[in-house]
Image 1 (cartoon, rainbow, N blue to C red):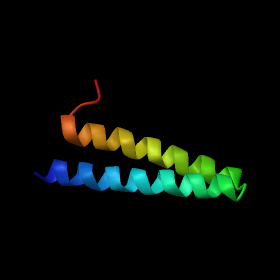
Image 2: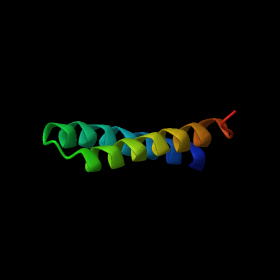
Image 3: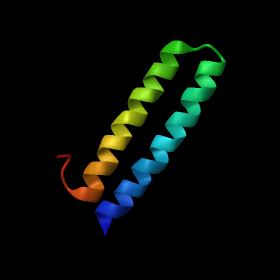
Length: 56
């Protein structure tokens, strides 16, 4: 149960990071956009790990 809640929370954070990446690209803040897209990728990996228990 706790893993699913953690997975949903990380998916939500990943979506927020993607939205912030788009806004950063529109304002031409490339460094911030790279930071947010890396954070979104990390949240994706964490949510997969939380839902399935392993990555591979």
